[in-house]
Image 1 (tube, helix red, strand yellow):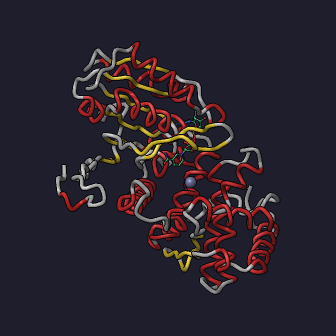
Image 2: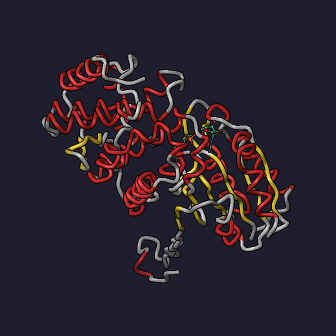
Image 3: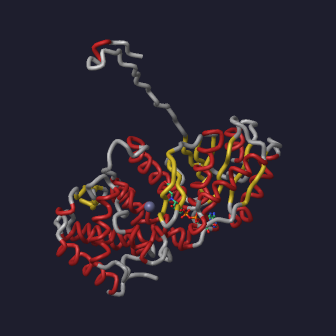
Length: 392
Ligand SMILES: NC(=O)c1ccc[n+]([C@@H]2O[C@H](COP(=O)([O-])OP(=O)(O)OC[C@H]3O[C@@H](n4cnc5c(N)ncnc54)[C@H](O)[C@@H]3O)[C@@H](O)[C@H]2O)c1
Ligand SMILES: [Zn+2]
């Protein structure tokens, strides 16, 4: 407390104020493991360390994996309970977080207990929210089972649910104790969800790692038959590099309070509006792919990328079966998306465009983009998508 009489001379009183540091150092591990459902289960048992735990999962993942995983965990720890929560994007809301909190009470979780989220991004987002609320914050471990979760949704510190008509409107920054990634879960993932995960991998490669981009160009086709390749060294390398690059981008700004210029926002300028324009029938990864195609064409038009790089970007997306065009991508929607990005990113749109393969830069002001260039970019992508070389 400051008692300096000079501090408040107008009242002749000492100032009563004290600055309080509210920092909390946190670290967590993200790890690629083998055979989590078999010999590798030790990795998870050691995270739980004998503590009471609640495993949260969704019906598909439970049927495929979690029932086996829980049996294996119970051999070491008898205080494991499970909740199988039917949940998808449409029902990812506060009611589901409340259900998890109720289950936490029923399972007798205390401050020392731990929650384990085994599932896609919807499941791990709900677990992140619930863990940050229960007893004002208990430990939790994420085991992402989709490619999107393993390279993106499951590895940062954020979690959110939809509220009213707003996507991810209510959320938290709350780090997990650890994230355990086993590509073997991808064996059963449907092709469409695999492609959505690849879109995020291409995003991070295009934004900051030319070598990762080359690996996708060489091996991307294998993702189409992912079940046959989940133990291949190339696939593991691609997933691990994508994780590391993503974490390198996230780490200096984990709470998103240091800068609103984030290269990992590449592919996320037009995609939110595209998703909502289709009533969310278009998946997030598909919208990100179309956004990257538009962003690349715009960068090409503005002289940021040459012909060859532009073609490589479109080919990489098309080769793995991602869409590059949608009739919903009108000039009005895209222009509105840029203006909306400015609202969300502190007054400046910070539109991320590729400036080469493995490099990206920002258009910081709305006026930095010419409507004619955007229109020409949209026509170029539409022509490319319609020239017969797009798969699926
Ligand atoms: N917190 C973050 O930083 C962050 C970042 C990006 C996205 N997200 C969120 O992630 C969510 C999208 O995640 P998602 O793409 O993983 O979707 P998802 O969680 O809905 O999973 C997709 C589908 O795959 C099924 N599934 C999961 N694992 C499977 C497996 N191994 N085999 C077979 N089927 C399996 C699920 O049952 C589901 O039907 C969105 O809600 C998004 O908002 C969060
Ligand atoms: Zn995304």
